[in-house]
Length: 250
Ligand SMILES: C[S@@+](CC[C@H](N)C(=O)[O-])C[C@H]1O[C@@H](n2cnc3c(N)ncnc32)[C@H](O)[C@@H]1O
Image (cartoon, rainbow, N blue to C red):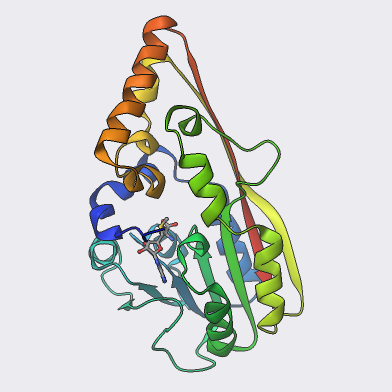
């Protein structure tokens, strides 16, 4: 599967947080930083800077890393004083034992060599440091995303590229993380009725990696299927239920 070029997505990406800032994720990261007394914090795959922005506080030194120049350009506008590094997670140009907390949100499924990243994360953490992975649990029994019903092949693409949480735990253990815990930190549960669905930021062509990765023709065909469903039933329902899990390793 060809990796997505996030430079193409950067302009549209942040609109999702205007629609839904996912406060549960921000709270969980902030609580983790506090409970851990983390002063030096790195976000890997920091994208447009949504989470670093909410973690800014006196006494915390933050940094972001991301390979996409376009995403970092967006982050820079939000975080004028935070060091932002253009690099991949698997080869971070950062010194050993530099951070108390490293975290990733919705990034694991983009890594080409996750095991290598976990070893690099272990090295970059100071003794007692924590690594937190946050992401959608697409394998959960009650996971629902109406996009899958209208864009054929997207569900299969996600099932192939999203590692299970059991796999993520195994990579963490192999890299030397002993204590691993997990919990649900945010649930998106929303139902759009009829035409409302066209206001969903996640339905935009470049609003998510899933729809950015389908061809323009396939995207148009999916939108036409949604349009046909609304023409047939003006109050057609478009439902999303996504749990965001946080896995923490020490
Ligand atoms: C879904 S976005 C998440 C951005 C941000 N964490 C958030 O939650 O808003 C995925 C991000 O991972 C970055 N990414 C892709 N491949 C990566 C890699 N190998 N190492 C680090 N980041 C990567 C992309 O450039 C993109 O910014």
